[in-house]
Length: 260
Ligand SMILES: C[S@@+](CC[C@H](N)C(=O)[O-])C[C@H]1O[C@@H](n2cnc3c(N)ncnc32)[C@H](O)[C@@H]1O
Image (tube, rainbow, N blue to C red; front, side, top):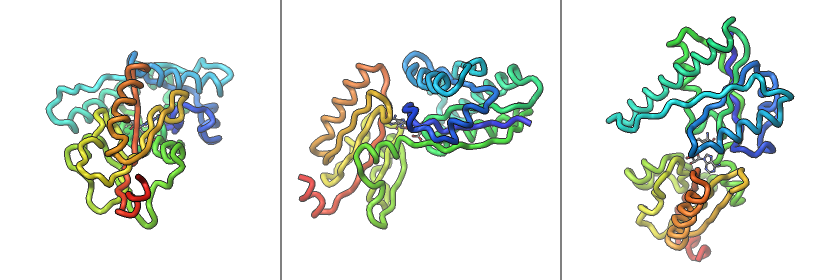
């Protein structure tokens, strides 16, 4: 029986790995690292350096080219589903090539935590289409959202308040979600916070969190929004890629008076 370890690796700082994650890396018979193309080569480098740091030999580490998502597929969800099938097929081929006996422990280092805007668990389920039914073990990791709230030294929620996790695409298309005073926004390539009309929204923004290039900024969107857009563009040009996340908080009139 194959054990598939999905190891939350936080976002690159080895000090953010849990002991459970380090022990899981050490006990894996095979670790597979995705290469996502030049633009995000830093992320493969982060995985390589974590393996090099915690393993005495990296013989059991292999790399593969992550299939690309076909953005031309009309329906977004169909495109993602096809992409997951392609990744599962690639994982299955690698597992069969490198674990021909059908046993052993295979590990993937998952960015942040595997439960948050990550499809490793969904892809693992699709391995059954390739006659593989591994036992999946999830090792939790520190998320980019936790690193964001830590960087700004803020609680995620207000007292008794609800938080919505969403994407830049949804915030832009659907606006502020009902019933929440805090919204955490992931996967936003286009600064969707600039589309909010309200002048009482505070933003806590961060990019490259947990990495040496980490930057962050906070303030009323009306005051710092344009500056964040400029910082983001400059950082992206400098590093060739960017990952950023932000928490939006709708303030009361009293809060706004305190914030300005
Ligand atoms: C595919 S999701 C993966 C999230 C990850 N599983 C986690 O636990 O944070 C990628 C998105 O997470 C956020 N993200 C991941 N790493 C980040 C980092 N180091 N700094 C800022 N945002 C990050 C960005 O919004 C990015 O678009």
